[in-house]
Amino acid sequence: MDTVLFRNNMAGRTITFGEYKDDGGFEALAKGLADMSPDNVQQAVIDSGMRGRGGAGFPTGKKWSFVPRNLPGPRYLICNCDEMEPGTYKDRVLLEQNPYLLVEGMALAGYALGVNHAFVFIRYGYELAAVNLKQAIAEARRNGLLGDNILGSGFSFELDVHQSAGRYICGEETALMNALEGKRANPRAKPPFPAIKGLWGQPTVVNNVETLANIPSIIAKGPQWWKELAATPEAAGTKLFCVSGHVQKPHCFELPLGTTLGAIIDGPCGGMRQGSEFKACIPGGASTPYFTREHWDVPMDFDPVAKAGSRLGTGGIIVFDQNTCMVAATLNMIRFFARESCGWCTPCREGLPFVRRTLERLEEGTGSMADLDILRQHVQHLNFAFCALAPGAMGPVDGLLRHFEDELLEHISNKGCPFA
Amino acid sequence: MLPDDLKHELEQRVSDAVTNREAAVDVMKELQRHYGWLTDEAVEEAAELLGLSPLQVEELATFYEMIYRRPVGKKVVHLCDSISCWAMGGETMLAYMASYLKIKVGETTGDGRFTLLPCSCLGNCGDGPAMMIADELFGPVTPENVKKLLEGQI
Image (cartoon, rainbow over all chains, first blue to last red; front, side):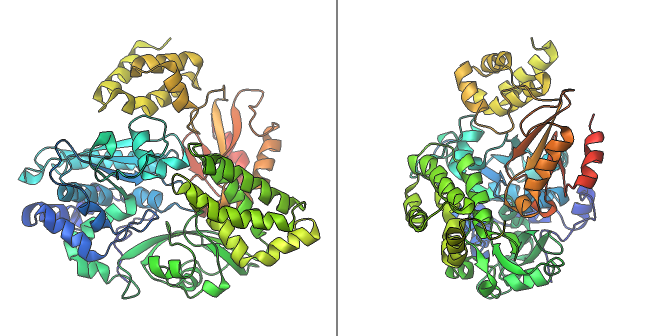
């Protein structure tokens, strides 16, 4: 199986600039700048079928194409490495292994978009990743692969790292732009979309780390080659799946997009840990509805996962065994989201604590049937929130109601948690 | 009072920024590193460096989880309380840490060495329960290895 992102992984350490170059590193950038126009690069990304790896799965090339070419002033590219979705750690692993892929990918994206100044927005706690990245940027600059007039092409590109101080909402692209500007990170109204009016009011593209790190391979080996790395004809490329919870080997794996859930757990994860049976999982980070045994054969790709009632999200798979109380698990996630709400809009600020209290009643054994209706209503109501945080937060609640109603009823009739 | 070299370093950071306030998080972090937490004095100093009002800095400082507006110990021990770590026994581990350090969650040890705080997902989910001490990630944390991890912190 061909891998793209983890191809050069060195056991227990970061790849060096020399090792990356020796294995064809920065050749894609050279090829792009010398042989391709910015439009050619963008077209290759469109042809590859790449869909954004940050969670929403929006086609990357299409997102790029929304940036108008004729507006005056600078345009910006931002790499979103505010990886705070619980259960997600792929971007950290990627940058700890190989920061050069991101640097090269961003330079190519910058060339395609006509961007001369880009930022990597990186969360707290990712110190090694940030150090690696800064070092990679310095080395690329020393070697004429960043900065003014790269490889004599006339294209100039600067890359800065912004280290955040911890708040989930900063991963929302418009909140991220406020955070980067040094403002309180509330989301902005859309429209205008960032492609028209983003960072400092200028056209801006925000892409995830994994998305951008794939660009060099798309350019070096061609969109068709890259697309066919996937497990199904509908899917495109590979995907980083980061697994946590009750499996034998919780780890981050690069696998063909469209690999089935069961193949991921039974394959590289080595199955469930001793004494554990698979009960459920979160397929794509804490804001996605549960999958159960019935979803074992679902290809882990955007459309099949959506069709099966959840979202591929970030590819952060959190696995639960038979001893896990799904009400308690859902409560844990709602507590996270209620705490991380920025407080800007009423549905999110007031609704999530209300849902949290409702789940607390159920878990503690003082809940009633009426509480189930409250939860059902809020799965609908919180779609009216200002940004995607609250609807995402209700993902696990939605899954709980659909797949584990019996467990909720047991909490009510038992007047307490049956797992306690 | 800020030492002159730190003050100049921060003035340089601010003047390198696209706009002054772009450097706000960096400035708050550096001041926190200097004072141990973001003191009232530090808020005023950050405001002056950034050309903001102290209230504008306060609004940012209280927004971020890793900016401390109250005194903390020399090292803040963050234990992840989010879902992957919860599934791996994070709640039990947090209670164990509190009893080991002989403090309640949120408190600082009598010798001022450690403050124990739960925190949002650390992005170390494959190694839960995960812990962060001064920007360094650890995991899985167990009652057996936690003593050594803490002793290694000076």
